[in-house]
Length: 271
Image 1 (cartoon, one colour):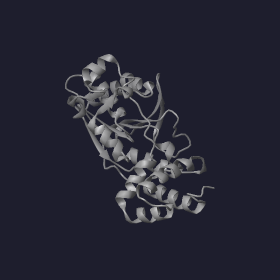
Image 2: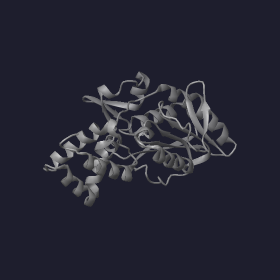
Image 3: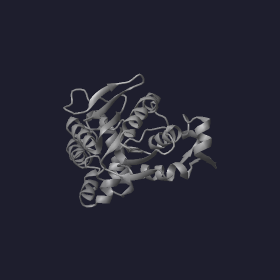
Image 4: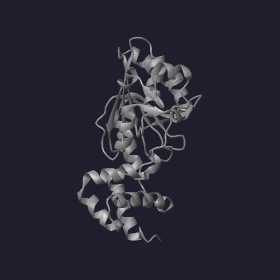
């Protein structure tokens, strides 16, 4: 047991974090929480983690900062290309066909848990490339990390972060600036970055596609089920859900249907 974070303090912090965000800390990832707490305690010029706990009970901004600190923001452009192959070759053609009969010419998407923005920018580049003239799209990109959202909003990425982007896309959608690349306004203006805690209803409705990849793994079964139910409520009657490669709705009481495509496995809502 750590002298810094004893069992009682660990229980208090993980209970509060779960209550406020749905993120679950167990003994296996206790060291991650401890390292993040050490950083916050030091920055607050405190000695005891218990004193820091008393602060976040009263200070919502510091609580939000802690939630930001404990999230893992691992992402990259075109991460898991099988999903984007599915989007390009299966989902979009199906949605276009479905919408044509209804006179609907807009694709509405949500990138939930978007981290620093690589996922929604990847989606935007693909849609800008493949959608027929006259069809528009809107993307809402959300995360619990304000720091990550600011990076996404700025749209500037160092050279080490643009791996995976084809030379054609890089030339078309980015501008070289100093030690990195800036996303051009033609793509930036198509994405609305917004803070969202997935414990709450997003307020979004009638979405055609939801990407929420590698987020549910941080939730326990109860929080996962609640999040998935909120996705259902936010989505249109003919829509698609993408979750992480290592995530599954198997065994969960959900209305989504499993869909195996030639490229990847996703979920659909057809009602």
